[in-house]
Length: 313
Length: 140
Image 1 (cartoon, chains in turn orange, brown):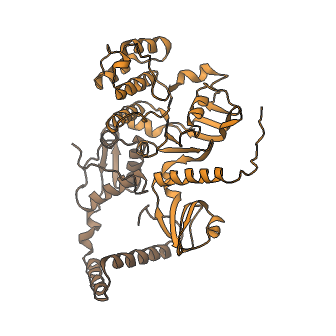
Image 2 (cartoon, chains in turn red, purple):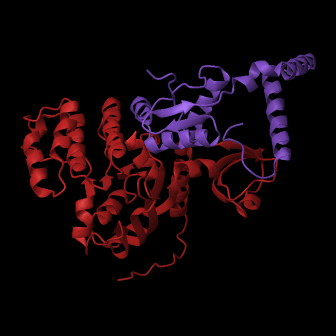
Image 3 (cartoon, one colour):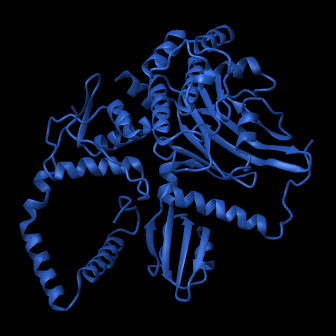
């Protein structure tokens, strides 16, 4: 039961904080004006379509890329200028969980042990044995699900305080996903780990995450607690109306109309007093899709002159 | 073996922790859980439905805040109060008047869906009038 208490009493300080973070490749902004603070102990979903900037954000967070604007801080330290204060505390599994293909699982563990000061060899062996993964087997002879588990086990054995996973579930079948998430949740119960995992679909992650960051068109559309998002986002259905009245108080994410009916997806800012609107709960998937749709529409519209357009460097 | 198992509906738009508290309350109302029963441990729930441990803790804390359960350190979370006494059987009079109302709704020619729509609309109006602040519990 001590595991439960550590998770409960985790002090809510910030694990990863970005402010005005941006990255430009040539003329193309991969990430722009990205600001959020991920509290410690959370399991966060980073959701957005392909090309939204998810990988760029994760690579900036571990110092694999240098920001064009702003900064990322891991437990208060910048990964590039203070690598010794950050890197030992961060685990990162890149997309497609790459492993040295010719290495056996045991070789990979040896490598991990020699490279990482906080390495937990017994936990690594126990985790892989529990999953029935033979240590003598070569990495490229393992199934996709097993390779993902080995990559996760390596990252966890580093005993990170912050674990970043780029599209960890993309190549896994439903059963392997479940097993992967089970291993991950197990680890978070053992010690107060903060996790940020990216995906292009939310449905994979909504059970396991309690924090959501929606990224689209290189910008953060929403960042916050998932229960709070479910509480404040509603679908309003009513007789056909101009959404302007609602939009003056609340944030309209999506609006659609028929001849007689108007359907809105709004982020409430207090209560709706107009009783002609029928309020319904919205699933996290619908909320996410509405934000992604909004971002796409804004992109398709003639671009407004954006503030901070000029390069800060 | 746990007394009850939880399930999650991720399309409902109801936060997962509220789904768990609602399922515990429903089990209490139906008499499936009584005083002294132990809720599944956080680890058991996480294993069973692959859910964030923080979510289960949040649900159990909420139930504790409502005085329905108590957590004993090192042992688990136990039911301390039942809802059965205030539940369906003890409201025979209300139930009878609801049945009379239903009969008159049928007499007026309303079908089941119309009755539900009328009830939901009136319920919402009543709830709205009763409280101008505060939110209802996620679902109607």
